[in-house]
Image (cartoon, rainbow, N blue to C red; front, side, top):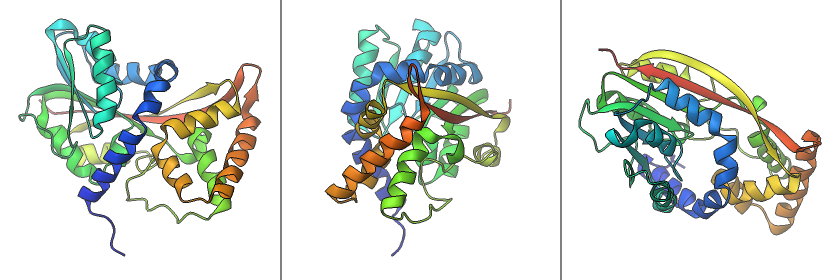
Amino acid sequence: MPPPTPAAVIEAQRNDWNRVAAGWDKWDQFFDRTMAFINHRLVADARIRPGLRVLDLGSGTGYPALLAGEVVGTDGTVVGIDLAESMLAVATRKAKTRGLQQVSFRTGDVTSLPFDSGSIDSIISRFCLMFLPEIPKAAAEIARVLKPGGYVAAAVWSAPLNNPFIRIPIDVINTITPLPPPDPEAPGIFRLARPGDLAGMFKRAGLTPLSDEEFTAEMTYESAEDFFRGLMDIAAPIQNLFAKLTPAQQREAERGIITAVNDYRRPEGVSLPIAVRIVSARKPQ
């Protein structure tokens, strides 16, 4: 069976992320707090400052575009791009609530950006690029729309071994029904986990890589059950795996995930390690 076309992958992802938009809205404050260090690092690595024109790729429900909007101020602009209309509806509401008139959102494909060449000062992206069917095309578009001297900073998930937050559900499901080995070149959570992968794509697109670092942190939930509820609310890839299980297997998977997550219990709750790779580059002057 031939692999799906890029257009088919993009359409499937649009449906997936529209499906979980309400879940991301529900967990908004939790992820705003927990992922704050990533948002701030991206804004810093992209050298965002007042008055700049900024592009956020894969904005979802608004991060890190909203933080960038606070930094650029009313003399700058931030545009967030995402496939999922329902996610962007949440982002637009939050920008309006915060009075960030300089921040707007639009649906679009990251591999075909609707901007003139050399028109963007800084580009940021959180947990988007690894899901793209054609990452080199996206890197080329980033290089095209950046102004000479402009910066890009992107966050992607690092290695599975360092990410129990994501790895545990996949491992548990794999014990119930064996999953096919992941294609290292196919879109997926860990597609850009290896050091140098994304930086190399940026370099081949004509950008100058600046940094490629792994950052570790923890996601702390009140309980393992709370983690599972959040997982099923927001994680479209995990939802897709669950959909392939029978009801009995789903119950078994839920019990297995909760048991495994309880190994990370502490007095304040369950704290699951995460590892994020943040890569930055600059367009030559």
